[in-house]
Length: 329
Image (cartoon, rainbow, N blue to C red):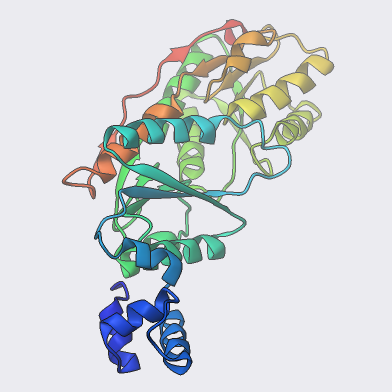
């Protein structure tokens, strides 16, 4: 989608480009009627005068946009986004770029943010996170003509930095099976996210390959409270698993608190493994076995891809190390 220019507004208003500039910047030199007509046309075309006018002297904003979901109750301890942003900022600084960050309540608001940014010339491209199974964002970005890269599963029309979630799940289940576990539950995340569905599919496939009894629990979100609630359900079922794999560290901590409260010995009776690590996994008792993901590395790699000569390619990150701790020994 072509950005609106002063020439476009001038043509529709039947005035000179200079008159449009004076009207949009609220300067003397045009009549009130002309000013009102120019502003009305600019607004109808999606032009935002106070920001776009400042960008007229440059075709580039030297900035990359990132839209994140507004934090919900119980999710404020999630460190993932913080480290991801730190990695993005570090990479952008090296290129002389800045990060434009905005939080939204839903995808409708997110799509409007992209339209507004592009119309205002505030960004040269955007970074996407949390690719969804039915994701409206790539089509809208392609329509607008905004370059984008995804930190996660590939989306049509843009590049992506991906992690092999199937390989991670295979290593997790193989580790648990090697320690004698035969019945494993997976406390996953939001079923509408591509990486969650990929992990779920790999969980069942690898479980079948290893001859394991597998069960899936789907919490309402990624919070500590949700992890505790799903763990309580698993422990009260007629067939209690002998190992639980959690999608992230918050789900793990919520589950571990319920396990300890239930006086179930870890790892003798129940092994616990987290697909993501945090300092808390190392300071709780027992310490939790986890994969040493670095969101900062993912964020930096996504920036480098977007600013590269070939931003539409798919690039794979090295698989994170599995650090075995007390919870699975």
